[in-house]
Image (cartoon, rainbow, N blue to C red; front, side):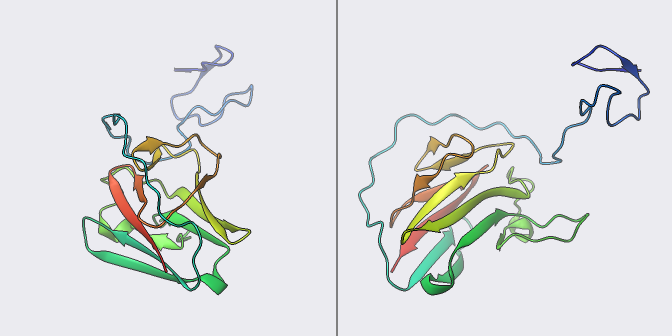
Length: 160
């Protein structure tokens, strides 16, 4: 039997939702990894404005994702969902993302008033901007030269 942590009801082992409506299984299948919490990081002072191009470079694989400023509104970072077939804008799945703790819809970059912001989507292993963990759903401004860490994968930001 599977005891509900919310109401204490005894549910069958294969139950997904308790009679009280509480979810009994983890909503994400993202592998939770051990991440050492970083110390203080060096301040970054790169530009927040750009004219033409955003480049996200996966540091470990020398892989780049290029985006045209005029076509930018929102970029999803993560890995493809095998059940729905939905892929994020930046699909890191074939680059080892699952093993590195990247969620399917890990984080997003949004453009607002000509400035880019990074937002963690309540990911299992956290999103870090220059080694500072983001608070879920709280946008942070992106600058040229910033490092975005999803789980253990690092993307370097270039604005041109």
